Length: 236
Ligand SMILES: NC(=O)c1ccc[n+]([C@@H]2O[C@H](COP(=O)([O-])OP(=O)(O)OC[C@H]3O[C@@H](n4cnc5c(N)ncnc54)[C@H](OP(=O)(O)O)[C@@H]3O)[C@@H](O)[C@H]2O)c1
Image 1 (tube, rainbow, N blue to C red):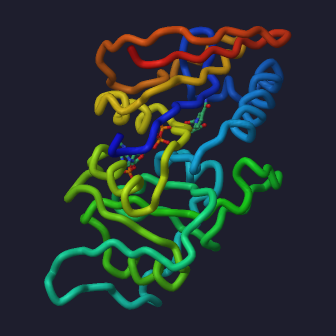
Image 2: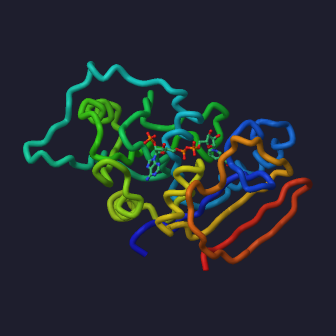
């Protein structure tokens, strides 16, 4: 396979929603703990999140003052990937179309020190529609970046590079709804790992896959832990 094997790992409500306040209800705590445990136990090269999820979970909306950074412009006019030495280990891969994420370190600092996230090497996946000074900031921070698409991120092109340049064999796709939908439309989700919490979501919550089409999966595992269901599906 010329891309990493993709496992979409998510907590969902009974009605298949993945965003919103329901995730913070006490009834959802058990599912969240199980979700983090499965994240730690699943062997993978790292995890992928959309820009909004990375902001909510790790960067908190902070953004660098780009006037302090030199723009990275190559003579050819072509935007070039930037890979740092000693790339190995576990990756936190941000799908960040226009370079909106402000990182204070080149590795994830998880607020709870969860070994499933803490210390992961950050990789930025960008479209070419990005401020060149943001590239200067990433290079100063020693954060590798790859380009995949002109105005939006081409999921298949990004996955090709993640496999062939970075060396990722398998990755967890961990939301949210918008990025999951983009991956599902590209038909690159090989497996679903769902932790279902016994809650109905609020009316503004988004579905597991935003704007996805119909596709078929086969149930490969279904376990109950107290009030939580753990289900795995593989693409048919
Ligand atoms: N239930 C769970 O297990 C779980 C797990 C993770 C997150 N979440 C929840 O998910 C929420 C965020 O989800 P969300 O759906 O609003 O956002 P998201 O999927 O986290 O991020 C969407 C953003 O990703 C960027 N992106 C990069 N490439 C893209 C592409 N090819 N197609 C589409 N978007 C692309 C875009 O950023 P730009 O707008 O900058 O272009 C887009 O707006 C969080 O609030 C979090 O609580 C839940």
